[in-house]
Image (cartoon, rainbow over all chains, first blue to last red; front, side):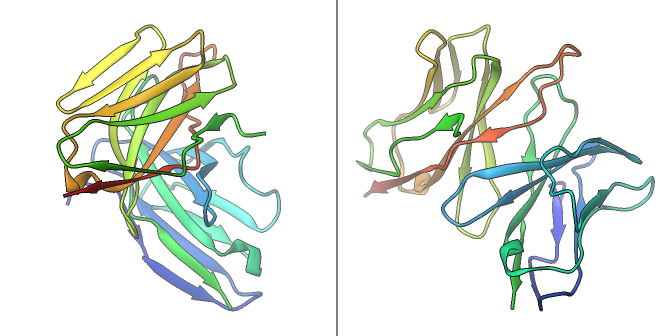
Length: 114
Length: 116
């Protein structure tokens, strides 16, 4: 499967726990993006990363949220001390470049906070 | 403030007819526009895009039209098929001085139902 791979597909956490969401971009893509979708809403940009670099994290909450894209391995979106309001679908996308290049999305991780 | 608006939450058309999905935007800096299709429990699938230097782009049954003066774009699907039933998202991005335009702003989507 050459598409964007996200895991897990579903993740349940209790308030105060940590959530780790993983994303492997499409082969040949070095640009990774994370988006969040709340119910009945469109996707909202969170962060843009390249290997070992955070390029733009302007859409990410300042506290509890972090993202990385290490030299080896998948990109990770980490949410510490989760709260009910973090319940959402989190989508990862990747692209070959950034100038008029479409982003291709994974199937998302549905995060539920108990 | 919603910069990309899809004012029709839903649209129903008959199989074989044309589907027209509309999208309006407010940010005049947007210069790249995309349409995605999304099935339940799946991620958005890229359909077609258009840059602001064009006013039309066609790919098979899908055509996107851009009217920059009206800040309006539309997606035409013809002929519509039952498998086209999905939520359609319009997205836009603004280029920076380096030429990259990566931050997509999405509308809330339109649910298209194509009836057999």
